[in-house]
Length: 463
Ligand SMILES: *Cc1c(COP(=O)(O)O)cnc(C)c1O
Image (cartoon, rainbow, N blue to C red; front, side):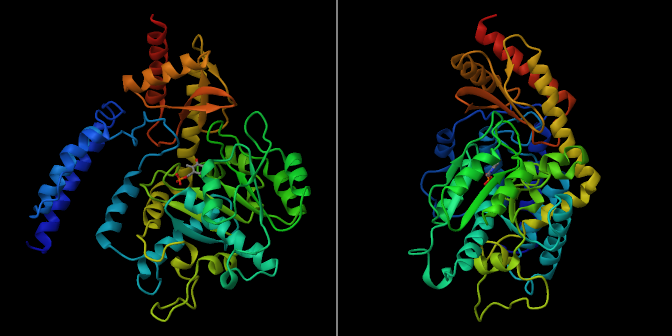
């Protein structure tokens, strides 16, 4: 089999053809997949044949087989979880990242990737209102971004307590007390578990899911020793933001490290009218966010930001004879993330930011919040629909009377396929969650969303 340019060209042309067809199908196709995974494993699986297949045919077969099992997640009519679409510049540059095939861990080895990611990092700090000079690491998602920030916290807190984590490990170390809001994203607990820090103390939250600073104060005062407080920018149900100025002040009073999970919420800082939501969050020590959500770059792309660069590099760095370390510049990418080898996932972030400009980022996030508020307004005008949260950002939670009806309407919406919205449980009620995270979602999609809910509700009621 040839390994020359022609085989690449044919395979890539096929990929471009199928990708374009997929993207062009998004505005019209049902959002839900048509088949289940087990239907596809029969076609795609079986025994691995001994002989191979030309690359172009592999791509054709893959695209044709996968097509009915794809969810139109990057359509403007997808409102599930918090997902996000893909901007053209981000998608195309992601292809380049694959074609370039750079190992982005070392500055010396791939100066172009390092320079692009460093620029993207600087732009992000400014856009998100975070302290200039903080370290920025490109990781796979917000779970890992939070993990990375909290790993820096663990290192610093133990170091300040006189414990050498790198030499002595965690067994026998002073206990780090961890505090989260009752309505934090559960992946924060996962990060703490990876770090061996155990189950956090869940601090009381208000009706919108915002951590209550007085309750945090009482919880911190109930013990002593190193403490880590994880706050939230953007509650996955209500979209609400923790009261940062008060919560950070309380945490500081007790000497705690403050981390902020801002997977999708940190982007509010890029919009002048929404900046109040994140006010005070810049006084934290570390932050985690996703670019694959609100910014709309392809998976996988989370961003870890840590003010205390030496804590981060102590937690993540590695010194060996075979790597060539950056000694004069801003440090090597691998010192800021858990991975050593990785793709240059910051490149699509650079491309997305360059294609939008700061005004474009603001317009995109503002548009998502406006669509959420329009959907909430449309839904609250329907008989039998209750909007449960104060819609101030991109999330809308609704219920349709009792839990059984809410579940039935949710299932009917998904079955109808005009939009996709997830069910969840919030504050002891089954709910339908509408999450706006796609740059395509605008007037038409808002109307489609409201109509889809309305017709599903009618069909559940049998009218
Ligand atoms: C999505 C999300 C996460 C987890 O992010 P991944 O990118 O899926 O790892 C964490 N926190 C919040 C608030 C989220 O919305």
